[in-house]
Image 1 (cartoon, rainbow, N blue to C red):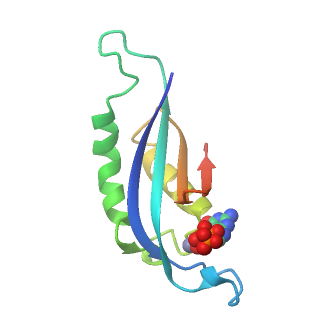
Image 2 (cartoon, rainbow, N blue to C red; image 1 turned 90 degrees about the horizontal axis):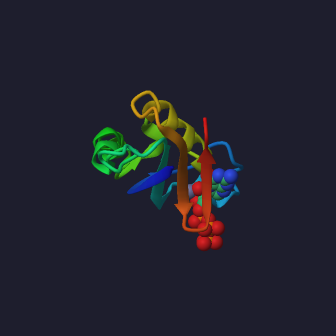
Length: 117
Ligand SMILES: Nc1nc2c(c(=O)[nH]1)N=C([C@H](O)[C@H](O)COP(=O)(O)OP(=O)(O)OP(=O)(O)O)CN2
Ligand SMILES: [Zn+2]
């Protein structure tokens, strides 16, 4: 069984490695959406793969590090593309949430990156 929990955060960033003429070279903001997907058997007692509250307890502190921040200033996010943010979240979260099987980061409702480790 796979379950997904979504989170949102607001943040500013710029992409320093695109040409200066690229509009994303300038500082701008996004309303990001993060989806954590978790996979495992359904516990016959609880009916859960994992309690959503437990996922929130693990991811909440990381979300606070991202929300209303300038992402380029965060350690490991000097080039904060959707791809790199997804990998960064995976690396910090996977050791704490073993059942996690993918991290999806939406920069806009139409553009996203998905990382499966
Ligand atoms: N593969 C990637 N390509 C791009 C990324 C990325 O992370 N991975 N990021 C960007 C910029 O961050 C850019 O800001 C994307 O958002 P936006 O400019 O809003 O893109 P839209 O197409 O939605 O803009 P509209 O104004 O709605 O046309 C660029 N590429
Ligand atoms: Zn952007």
